[in-house]
Length: 224
Image (tube, one colour):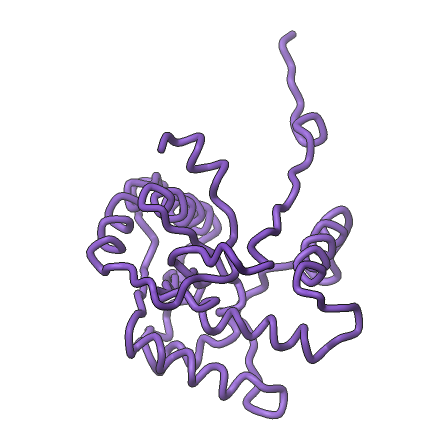
């Protein structure tokens, strides 16, 4: 597929086929291509930890066993969102959340179902391959911007192989558990995770399509 088709068909898939494997050779190829992403003075700030097979299963089981509010407290070492979240960002976020919950039949106030659905993140939504992304703590915001282009490359290259993905900011609060399983050094931040696999087309949550704001609301053209 061409670049435009890859961009337009990329979306966050939240249910994968667990019994349809993805070869590590394919993942290796995707990462090598994605690493052609630009970065300031070619610093290449990305570090990737790939989990599959029994290593994936052990990580999933441990995080799910320890994520409950009565268990160890988990918190990220950095903030993804501002608090409080200003408009229009809060409205957009809520619309996406309720759009997903609506497809799953989760009603407002059903905290148990919401908690269960959020927990799906830590099974990589049943995807056979999970990625964890880290960055050296000494690096500044420019390298974080570069990192986003690398992650986008991964998601687009996945489409070439008929694969889908889901970037996951749910993982940074569990950096202590990730360090135990993956030997991630303390001098690195966990940025996010990503699920990679083949879409479960029968799953209702995969019908979610998030809108985009019209071009005129966020672009200014000047020609004089």
